[in-house]
Amino acid sequence: MAEPGQSPIERFEFRAARLFLRRLMALTALAGGLAALGHAPFNLWPVALLGLSGLFAMFRVGHTAARAFWIGWAGGTGYFAVALFWIVEPFFVDFARHGWMAPFALVFLSGGLALFWGVAFWAARRAGGRPLAWIAALTLAEILRSYVLTGFPWALLGYAWAASPAAIYAAYIGPHGLTAAALAVAVTLWRLLTPARLRALPMLGLYALLLAAAIPLGRPASPPADAPVIRLVQPNAPQHQKWDPAHINGFFERQLRFTAAAPEGPAPDLVVWPETAIPWFLDNAGEPLRMISQAAGGTPVVLGLRRLDGPRLYNSLVVLDPAGQVRALYDKHHLVPFGEYIPMGNIAAQMGIHGLATNEGYGYSSGPGPRLVSLPGIGRALPLICYEAVFPQGVGAAPARPRVLLQITNDAWFGQFSGPYQHLQQARMRAIEQGLPMLRVANTGVSAMIGPRGSVSARLALGTAGYTDAALPPVLPPTPYARTGDAPIALLMLLALGLAWWRRAPAK
Image (cartoon, rainbow, N blue to C red; front, side, top):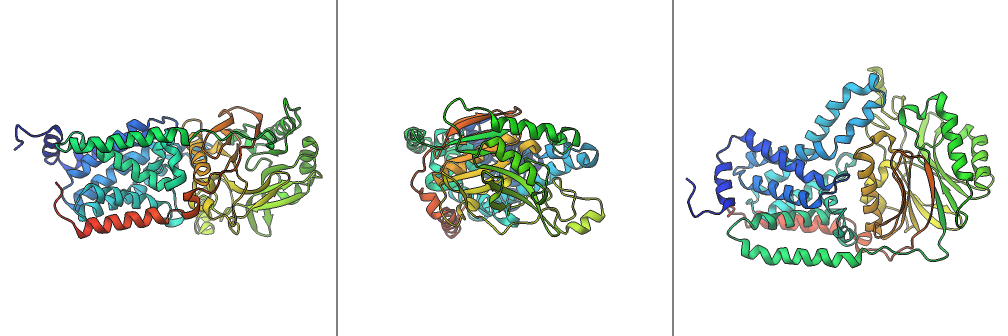
């Protein structure tokens, strides 16, 4: 029975250990949901840290590996259900055709991703159940879900820091290092309620100092006086109207009008339109492309469109010269599973199942991989079409260091609540990790000019049509993370888990 002199956390652990597993799982799912509130649009990173602390507290009472697995799975399910709630939005674009899939998508995606957490909790318990084992195992689980089966690193735990000054540390330790840091802080917060609170206070003080030190590190990098000026064009074409013949010309003319508008300051050196900005395929878009270049008045234009190469369909980006000719071409290579293509697509098509973004059986084809395109007067850019900006390792795989990251996207699929803001949040993290500015143009928003420390110097709000001219921020020297990638933190976590396994003993 509980002793009168026990600390509050010890009394909690004693009582929680006697609960039925399903009740523990419900409590853990709640803690996971709280941990997800660190992501946009909530940005409640202190609440997220408390939620992670609650997850560790529940891990402590999973006294067997099997019990720990189910506790971890429940926590992950609660976390992903909140963080990825936007996943239902694409199914509502064509509700009659896809609406029935929405609840299944959220349930299966959340529960499937939570398996990584369940295995992590199981492994940490098998390794002795100490805090270091839990931190290492859960960080490794987040790394694995970033790579396995093409990867899905959306809503990484480390992004809980994105709205805090600590986001700048992504330049040094990357997103997975930030995950380990968040888990370490969570353990320290838990220890404040235990008899080890006096030993936890110095660690808490160290974290506070690191947070304060991040403030000057994250100061925006000001563009030089002669910095190139970029015009970001946001047409705001709702997805259910985007390909409607009754609206196509209106959206096209809107973008032409924004492109031709007289600048309030220096003339733009580049105009950027979003992903699939026009409905025509590249091979029969000669006249529309000339109209675009004419509206730009000789200024180079970047835009997204589809192209056919025999039977293959590509989601592409082109750079137009002043005559409307294609100066550079890039084909998206990291496609969205079940969105842009369906595995075994022809068989699925026979059953009436198609990717959300295409009506073809196999959907889009994958391009050859990352490549750089040259932007006249600016330099080399790394194109990222929509989903590709989610992958830190993909940005790091560029064949050479670019002058700028260039993301075009159609976030109309993501609704108006959390998805577009989380996508912007991840774009900011890519800029910080690489020490590079990013041009981000989204069909419905949020379009933004992002500096190499993650600051947003210009933006177009979600759900609005318009354009903005913004000076291109400078390039910083290559960051430590840009040089090393994820290997150091993955190796460190493997060593930590191995050490915990070697020294495993009942947790205290």
